[in-house]
Length: 107
Image (cartoon, rainbow, N blue to C red):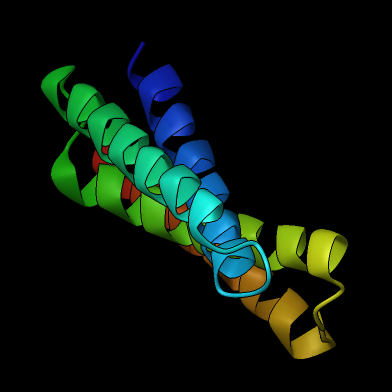
């Protein structure tokens, strides 16, 4: 269940961040409720993952890094924001960093 909680935490954080983008535009106040609900759900899921035994450094590292990478890709698809080769490289480095955190936590 730990990984399920962590994945839910990442996905709800990304949804909240994308909703924040909508709230800053023409979407207005209704999107602010989605932002609030998304971040509340995300922190709840991360808390459940921590209670289930996931180390804080691992949880936060994966949560933050995955959130950044997924938000960059989703904003490209949804809002047609740029995703350059340098950004693609950064996303690749994030994936390598998350892998290093996982390997390091297993030792």
